[in-house]
Length: 339
Ligand SMILES: Nc1ncnc2c1ncn2[C@@H]1O[C@H](COP(=O)(O)OP(=O)(O)OP(=O)(O)O)[C@@H](O)[C@H]1O
Ligand SMILES: [Mg+2]
View 1 (cartoon, rainbow, N blue to C red):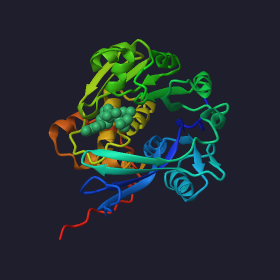
View 2 (view 1 turned 30 degrees about the vertical axis):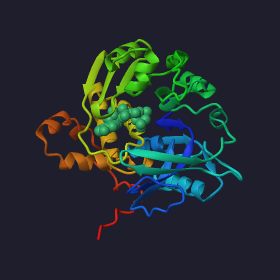
View 3 (view 1 turned 120 degrees about the vertical axis):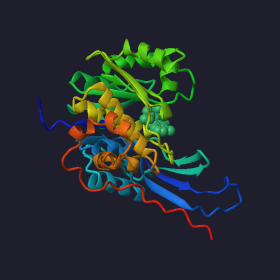
View 4 (view 1 turned 30 degrees about the horizontal axis):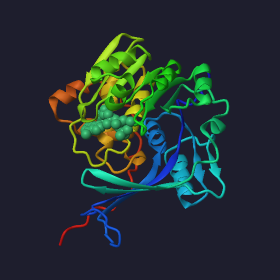
């Protein structure tokens, strides 16, 4: 096997996210609100790429950068700060980067996005995809040609899926699981695609279709079956105050891949992914909220709860000796003091 293979191959749409918090009240046309907080950084597919790279995975990203300030900024952050291989990525000349402004109010967010369909498709970017140890993909109704090629060249495909805005939840999508090693939907998606009415039943149905089936359950944690080893695992979520749940599913997926590449038992893989995702929801934004080894190590060192110390005891053997420098989180303006 070629040792220079990327650990993770990724492709998808890139966004520049600008998250405004502390609005005080919902925005009204004709009015100006001075917000108390702001976080910004790369989003979309960058969420997976940064989460993976911060666990030391050799991460190769095929995406399209706009030909503007935002594209240049995202490229610099991903390549120089986060050490992500962008050799399969391109810049779309004369085109803007998709920009999303998120207005966070209460527990909800209003999103406004400006962007265009990129001039290069996933298949155009990937061509004959390089052999990688894994690929982490978002399945879509229309299968992408590169996915079958990647599966055929020995790349292990870990697949997630998103909310279906048409609400049809076409079961044809599940045909693509024949190309996949693992599938990690959330419970709403899992139940909708399998036509079942509980996370457990959905997991059972999915485990017939793919070697490793995982169902994530938000604040209720995650559950999984690995048919290759005969393991079943069910773990609770981290008990945290959620600041911004953006990208929790992405951090979960990237962390599950990192732990899987380490060959860990299923309950450790699941615990680890739940931990990393739980740490990320305490930060603003997507990509830059990922904890990496540094964040996991810090959590482990400060952990007092004896039950959690026992449940996560495996980390003592798994954490690398050098967890690297502190990860950079989204530049955030701290909330203003009230006078
Ligand atoms: N409220 C929460 N408290 C603690 N952990 C959470 C919370 N919400 C999500 N997580 C963590 O993130 C993981 C993925 O979340 P969830 O099941 O909501 O996926 P998702 O809906 O695909 O997320 P996304 O909205 O990012 O697509 C959960 O398994 C859990 O570990
Ligand atoms: Mg999801």
